[in-house]
Image (cartoon, rainbow, N blue to C red; front, top):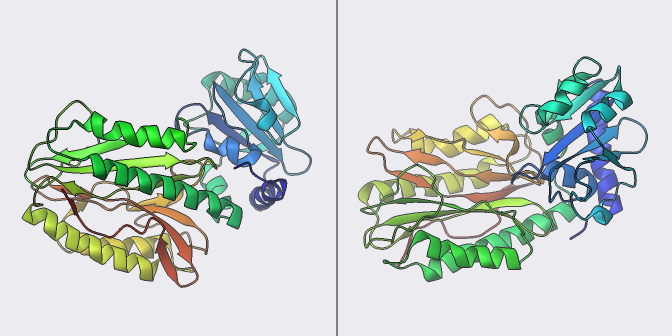
Length: 367
């Protein structure tokens, strides 16, 4: 699902409008091979990092450049980049410092992605402005081309849930249950863009901590929440999950499901253009907080070609929602007893309200 030139130009225009608004000369977008941090480079170039790291330099005026470290002549399939100006630099920071000297540059990935050696080379000669939030806001509204990719990722992820559900049975291990899902994800074009975990617990409830699937067999009373997070062939991440019970869920879990049903209805009404992220958070979290539960994770966040993007759906976030924004929503309800419920959906903001794209019923799945 290669990005079209028309779509790429739309993305450049949105980012450049943000650069001009913020008084910046260029955007420097960092990406690395670590899962979830390569997507910003793909977003601006069509290039998927396979090895090491890369930058896209998008000036306010002129053509973009994609920059790779010279010690790795193969960083990915270089013919897939729609940026013609490809640079292999012995030390990318030195090359960028020479190119950008005296300029004011918005950097995506300054805190978490950019290698230290490049930061040291740039510091002092270039005014580096942290620009993660602003870049994410510039790419938050999805085009029809992007939404096609999002929907395909949701289709793949939802099928992965059904594969997990079909194989679920007491006595089988967490690894045995996730392995067929991963087989399907890779065969469907996800490559390594998957981050799948589980939340498990006994007596019809789950514990709040995420864990890598292990060799522990599923017991007769266990609840399991497969946290399936993938990016399909177009590179857009999505998150879909539901709770699966080997027997009956606990009374506390049943109460949490009631709150989840309220959240689902509230999101359909409150996730509309013009509302703030704060307003949406308050609407969807009300059923949980009114029952006295803590929320252990953000209620939701924008999601795109990077797994977690701004804006987040949380207290005090006044970012205004717009049509065709996409959000991962996952209230992380935690009771005093330690019981937890954490079910994920990928939502689309429409003109009339929120639309959950996976269309899975809000329920416990029993086996």
